Image (cartoon, rainbow, N blue to C red; front, side, top):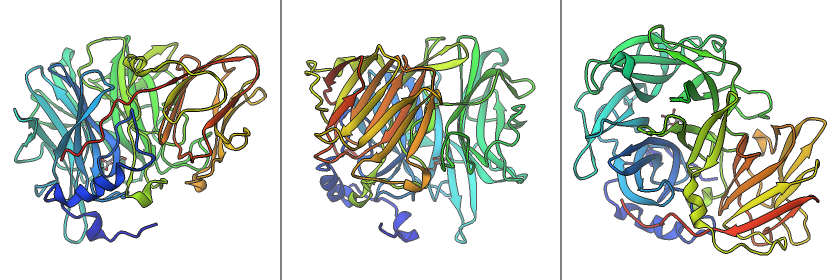
Length: 484
Ligand code: FRU
């Protein structure tokens, strides 16, 4: 593993020429994605600024240009008309002011119909590396490039730790007010969210108070990327609690959860209807964000980072890593989120292949299970050995996912076996790309997202009896071009 100095990680990108050779080199990697957004070079992490505006979907990702390392973060911009075919639109935000001198960290977007506004964390560090996070804003100019406000909307509070970031902006029509949720850590090192309010998007912001979430006062050490959506008469709060282990998640200390409940903007209280639930049960799913300005009141649109902080992935020696999930449509059913890949994805299907055990490198696999048992191995060798296995355990009432059979193993220390609780396996929809797999179980009641790096001899699958499978190779939907 390459050791990066601080100077290397925080190097400023002055010209596209500086990364042209890197891009040329990585596009020939066997693991470049075909229908998932991925970094043009270097590292992509959280989705940012996901929003519908004037007929186009905008998405940004946290981007470190230089390699598979977390360093100076830019926002990189991609756009789409259908949430599936994404086009590279160039750097979306440069860390080029005093307030964001060491990175434009995560944030969200909001369209008022006329203009698109971006809200992000300016990660300021002094020479002695003391950090001051500022909440900053920008407005997208006619040329698609942001025009930053000269001053931040507000700075950090000194009664919380330095971890105060990831503004999520919402408009609350009843109150005719905007609110910003900020992910935070208090001085007892507990995860929190802070609330700010204003009648105007770009001025008048005041601290409103800490978000109260009864029963969640001691739940993780930092709540990264809080985000909220109102669907089907309920509020859904998502966030990524860090620095804690949670039951069922092996040794991992980074998670992405959701609460269904009611948000009261007068008392700043989110009252959950029940316990927390995992947004996804896979190894690599984090910092999910709902799209803003979605018109359907019963549907939320979500995207997440396929990856986790502090983890290392197999493309690291190639100087790139990370990917976004496919965009997902979420609905509420019996107090749970039900997820489906964006509908347009069916348009990528090519003619179905005979189910002879071969697994194309980029495909969709649809499995119906008529039996009570269930076992699926993806990326098995020709004789069915090895691979990534998913076996239903009726005693545990869980599907056990085990990646230890893969040639390329990684992040062993966070665990290589996970359990997905379920009563039975009725059906599975698996989306397989060059370095990721996303599974939707039982019509999307549970999902499982992970990086995976199959080698040449790992392109078969096996299934238990009483199953019916359909395999569609998928056409590409992202272009790996060099736009900076
Ligand atoms: C989550 C996160 C955010 C932060 C960003 C920096 O992965 O740590 O809290 O804004 O990444 O890249």
